[in-house]
Length: 414
Picture 1 (cartoon, rainbow, N blue to C red):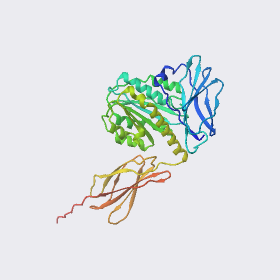
Picture 2: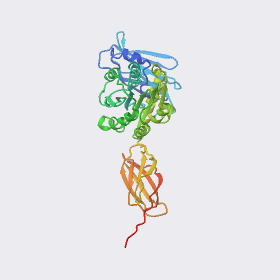
Picture 3: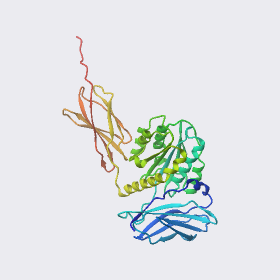
Picture 4: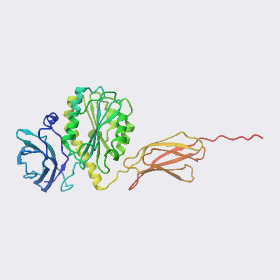
């Protein structure tokens, strides 16, 4: 059996999630270890509350069921077929009451990435449209979706952290990444999220995420996958593209769920590429469940990919974009550009006369996307080079040209 463990997948019935949420505490930290091509060891952490036992379901084309005692925290899944994909779920029970199930996937591939697969650990942030067009009744569908996606991860201070931010005319943090370290507490907070009301200022809200949520001061961890799940039901009343690009450039993978009146082109401006994986649009709130499972699968897959990159030690390096020159004078010109991806330490701006001359260079901080060139020759075309510097080297330079204004002749009176 050649397989890997993906992150916990979706809770198949989000309404059931909240009905059963507090009846019985679920297990946590579901893990798989491949023993051979037909056998996988499955382990978990038992809940702190009293339970009678665990129910395990292994599903491919046919189902396999196990009932285990409360004292057990590991078991073997035997007689697996190497060519099949399996979905595994486990839940706690006490009498007739059951906990929410935890899901995992065993997926056939051509090679094994690691003995234990990839742990799904991330900083996951929901940006939720709470404008008047959503409506109080429809907001419950959004709560349900957030609960299903957040519940698909193993929650903890050193595991997945979750934050929820709601926006309309202004933006507010419902709870930060550092607030909840237990799944039950997190899901209870999600189920009681208040509805805000107001206009739809999505651009400002995305900017808010970068400045107030995806920062070390707010609990976002360096070297961990970062995911933003943006949920909106209408066209933004302010620009979104530049703010979304800046968020993507600091390493945040953006998924977007548009509902009802959402603008498809705007969703694409916001989301990470490829759009087939990151953009979802449904005509009504009660149809969110139709795309819920796919979204959770793709978010989990995205976290796996980010973890693989981080584990390999590779650093994202690239080039800034869209170099613009303006405010030219006889001796100065101002440059702006779109930020390069990844953790940019510094930008180097080199310039020299196009017809030959001394090459000069200045540097600005990595969080800056503009520079002023001074002491230039009048009426001269300059070749321009903007390069991002990373901890592991330089990205590709962005090339451009700019021309200073012609100087006025000076007349001296005698």
